[in-house]
Length: 399
Ligand code: SR1
Ligand code: MG
Image (cartoon, rainbow, N blue to C red):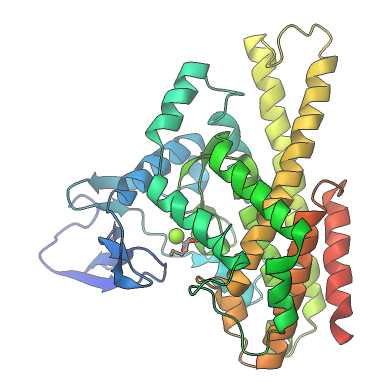
């Protein structure tokens, strides 16, 4: 009532386009600027319907994660006004002047603050929920409170397993060459790399993750960026969140060859901007994360590795840590790209390419790049090297 005023006449419209839940805009009919979002978890997966039952407790995970992330990074997380654990719903801030990032990228919109905002969000949420900041017992209790087995199982299946086998939930573009599909099932190096990422996802409880950080989970305008929808939140490997964002920017990059031309532009300018965002997100995240870590150690006068008066070993450990995190990020990004091409839940920038041959050609490039990310993840020395690989694979399009 405080937010909506007189609630005797409300306009309610269902607007959700996600795979799991229902989302409603609720506004005062007389003063539509008074509005909120109501999000409710039905006892099934929205994408499939009642034949795929799902417990409604996922709403509690989402509310808890929004509150936690909101406390750490209020400028990038919408406010939760109210949560009802019996109705499995929450009432939250209506971001009325923001657009889903995936949609904005398909329209070719430049967001000048994207890289800075997302790198801040990642650095703050991933650092402050980890053992680099929390006391060991607090972290362990947080891990246990955030166990989210049901939604993690969806990711374990749909991201790390089914796309690499002959599974009925997969679907393939009609023109996608059989050799590209076979490769996902038969390349030993690729299968091992994916299994390593799956193992890390299931076992490396490093920090509280959003768990589904694709460009459909981000709302944006020219000034502000908000991260929504953390129902998949759990304690997992940090690179899973970072990799999810990068994967989706790379899907936007490769698919721009279609969307850019369809809009009568030279796609390369926007593609260049997309790759700059990838570099800004990784480099910005890495710098901000390391600064938070160094500040924390100076303030607490305690090094994670133990006594280290000249900080030499601490700095060396930090650089090992970031190298491993970078490799993880690339590996997870590879898995995320592959699942969006051949798995069950697809993305609009690919599915909305009506020309079958053009779509398949873009999908093949995405798969090639994803494979390189996975198999060579420990060989890449910098994000610039990875971007050079993306450009090389895109340049092969005429062959
Ligand atoms: C079966 S749910 C499909 C996908 O939707 C969510 O956004 C997650 O990415 C999940 O894997
Ligand atoms: Mg979602």
